[in-house]
Image (cartoon, rainbow, N blue to C red; front, side, top):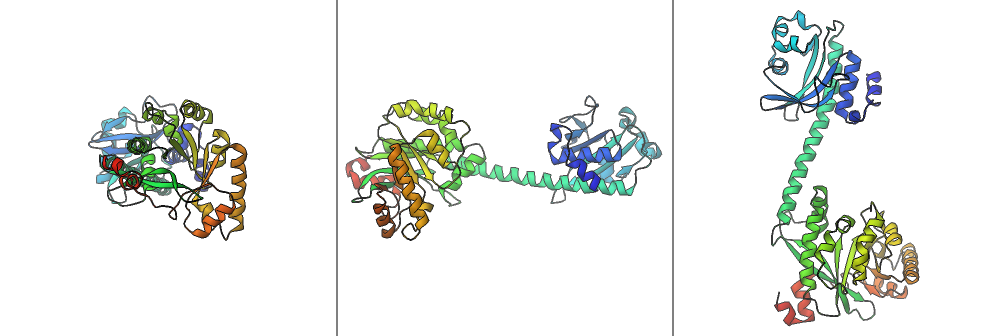
Length: 410
C-alpha cells in the first residue's frame, strides 16, 4: 500500500487531479492493467465518470455509456461473476459474453461503489486485454481499499450538492416578492447624535429565521449572490427616492456586483449625490483597476464610496489603498470595549489620522455604550453608528420620524 499511495500522490496528467482519477491510475499501474474506470449507474446504463486508459481513449472516455445488460457489472452484483477474474477464458459465463471478445477482456477486476445508505452508485473497474493469472485476493483487497476512498469522496460530493440544492431553493424563496424588506439604521453626528443619513439593511421574513449575512452567503455559494444583492439594492433605492434632503442613504454591494456592472445599471437614472456605496471589506478583489474603472463614472456623478467593516477581514487595507474611499467604516470588533482597550484605541487613532490625511470620513460602527462614545469623541471621531444611537427599524418607521407625510406614501 505505501507504494500505491506514493503513486496516488504523483498524478501524471491534469485530469488525474481528482482523487477518483488518481486512485484509478494507481490501481491500474499496480495491477498491470490496460484500463481503469469509475462508472455510475443511470437507469439501465453504466456511465463512465472517470477513466484512466492511456492510449486507448478511442475505446473508452469520460461520458461514454454502455447498457448494463452488455457489461460485467450487473452479473458481478448478482453473484454470477466474481469481482476478481484473472483469466476470463477460465470462466465459461464470462467467456460467453459478447463484450469479452469485442473489447477484448482477458482479465477483469470490478467492485461496487456504494452510497452511505447501501445503494449502489456504480463500479470501480480495471480490465486488461490479456489474462493476468498473477492477480490474487490481496490485489482485490487493494482495489476495495481504493474503491472505499472513492466512495467516501462521492458521498461527500453528493452531500455538498444536496446542500447546494437546498441553499439554492432557499435563496429562490428569498428572491420572491415580499420576502425581503428594508430596515434603516441611522448614521449620526457624534456631537449631538442627530442622524445625518441611514444605512439600508436587508431583512428576510421567511423560515429559517437567521441573520441577513447568512442569506447573502448562501446566495453567493450557489451563484445567486449578485441577484440577491441587486434585489436588496433595488428595494433600498425605492426608499432612497423617498428620503428627504439632506439625508443620505448607504447601500451594500460586493466587489463582484459592482465590477460586473449590475450596480451601475440599477442607479443609471438616479441622482447619486446623496447615495453611498458600501463595499464589503471581507471579499477579495480580482482586479482593482477594473473595479475602479466601473466606479469612476458613478463617483463623478456624486456617488460616495465607503469601505465597510474595515478591520474585520483580509481585504480592507487593499480596498482602502487601491480605491481611495470617501468613507471608511471601522468594524464593530474594533470599537467594542475601545474605552478599556489601549490597543483598540491606538488602532482607531491611527485610522483617524490616516483618514484626515487622505480626506476620508471615518465612521465608527457598532457603538453600544456611552463609554465607547465618549472615547470616540476624545479620538475626534465625527460620525458614529450603533444601537446606542439608533437600532435598525422598518424604513416606514424611520421616515415617519423625519417626515410623516412622506412615510405615509409608502
